[in-house]
Length: 117
Image (cartoon, rainbow, N blue to C red):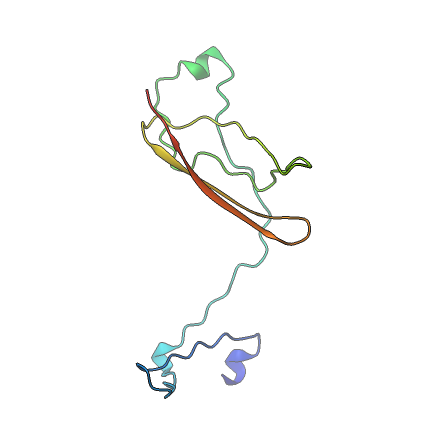
């Protein structure tokens, strides 16, 4: 990689079929990327519907991402709860939970919420 690899490089080599011959990269097969690195979380807007005016607002809520929170803490039993309003679509929502325990174990779960009239 020469000077282009000075800040680090990831090289992925592929093989043809079942042979062990390595395909040498051609210049047009090389892609340089710059990862964003650590990003400070920002506040995610989620409506609260606290006033009569907000509750009776006729403008439809068409959000596709309903809730996002990077800081949900669990109880000592590993339980947590969140509250949110769905959008105005009658649809099914995928709920994806991703996280990490204090000792570095990955937590992942996916489930579905069905919204009906």
